[in-house]
Figure 1 (cartoon, rainbow, N blue to C red):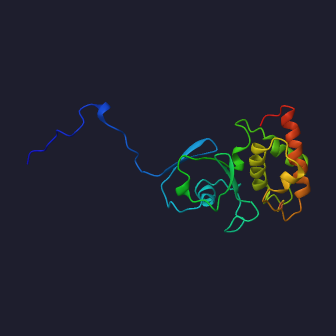
Figure 2: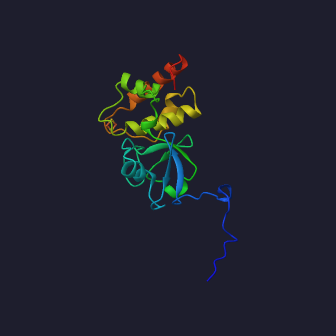
Figure 3: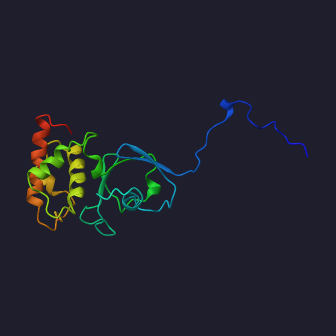
Length: 178
Ligand code: FES
């Protein structure tokens, strides 16, 4: 039987490339990724189990305590509470993305170290991401502003976290790179 070739492209420019596998495209810490698995997978498991970005912690199925916070388009968001299906085209930043490309710590990270605001460290990534969100909204937060953060620390570092955030604000005013 004769084949009808009329519909076939004749030039390379007639061909529109299509993805090998469709999926959910997003960026994480400036890198592009395509999730082709279960769209209901929470972001937390994509970060930890698929990408091996283990800085973001599990704080329970409802994200209570803020250990699982990441930035989604600049806003602190529970990574256990958001499925991959809602993240197409979004820009995610995790704690692994705070240092610059040369490995210099973000002023907030340095301030947490300098103020000894880290006990066991389990809650620390969440505090850092919540603090990033806070400083995006309020350049010079008061104690009351800091106390609105949803994070908990079982090691009792809250007071030192407050000091660390204020230290980071001062450092950034003096020109430390954010
Ligand atoms: S440093 Fe241990 S829970 Fe906060």
